[in-house]
Length: 251
Image 1 (cartoon, rainbow, N blue to C red):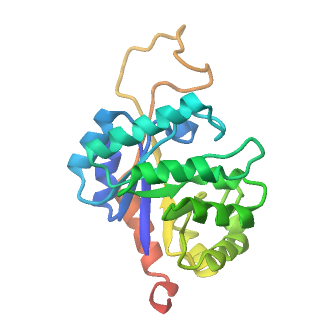
Image 2 (tube, rainbow, N blue to C red):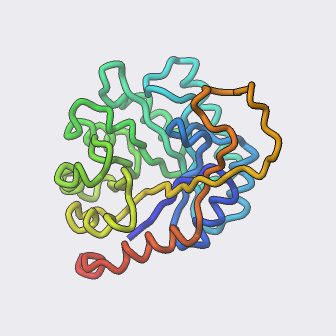
């Protein structure tokens, strides 16, 4: 069983490893679904961790239909990530109609080699997951991240089980979508998946004492003095819940 933790800071990455995660997905702007982290953050995390670090390659928030200019940015970011020495990449491209953009995704997968590539949750926006999983396989990606097209994995366990069965050994299916210690065992048992992805972010207050009440750098609804991070204790508890469930020894 493999547990991947999504992180957006060096502190959270260290906590994930301390808690027993087998891999981290490194992003920035997790509140927007994650975008490409800075070179400095990639380098700091890669140098500090002994477990694999997979960096997100996503030039902006929003949909997964990218212009040629954005595609060139993604290509450049891949080259930079390879030079830094991360262990793998996370990316995904769709057509306007939601189908997987096989050709351009395959081009990025080939550019990334010898690094492994996870096709991320863009697949959950595809109109037919049965077709989408075949398209992802055709790109050469080693893994696909999915919640079965639903908000949570628990809502889509039967569909995810179908994806696991259909893909076989051709691509690894990693399950996400509100994976927590009180449901991970059930999700593992009912889907047959062996890889799981969670963020586990907790909100903490900023230590900053002075705050300008008349200023917002982003949307007014966003609390700019809230910090979010991962704790080793939460990761450890999730790992125990996964590895102590019966199916881990039965499969």
